[in-house]
Image 1: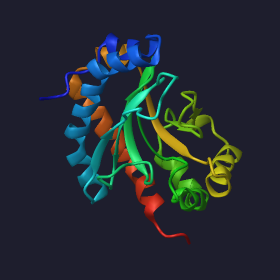
Image 2: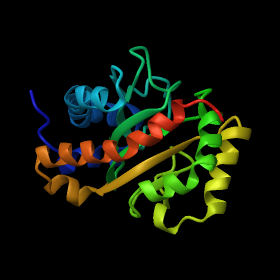
Image 3: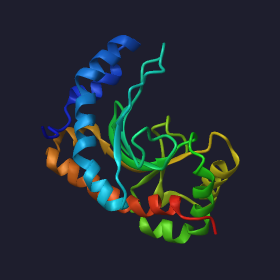
Image 4: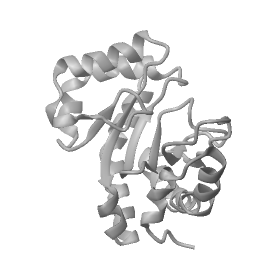
Length: 211
């Protein structure tokens, strides 16, 4: 089986009212595509990072009332999960798909990345295209545009990563749903690979030793 591309129904999942109805629709439409992307791209990410990468599709199992507003597949170096490690993601909100990398608050590695981010800020700034977005909160789809960010913006992100329990950051690209639906499946996967190639230096930075 190959990734067959996104359809309007994959994004419309997030307009379905109620936890159980939304989860039922999610399992029937979007989730199989995320699973396939996970299988398709794991070998590429293993090659890019130099270590075996495992795909984990969001199950939203802890939810009891509020339906998910987005869903994703994440790749990490652990077969047991992704939240404890820097990881890559592809997913969707109602308005767009996303392709990104990051480290969330569950990871004890976030402080190290915060320090490395500031120590190598000049290189990080230069390495990412201007249209990339940074997300200090992975539950908020409204990020900061890389080209518009100031040193103070990066410092706030780094301070939260190093000082606060809920510190986290994701960074990557937005693909508007209209564009994602129009894209040939192979073109979307190529875009994902190109994005992951751009983000791999951040992955390596997160695993490097504190200076």
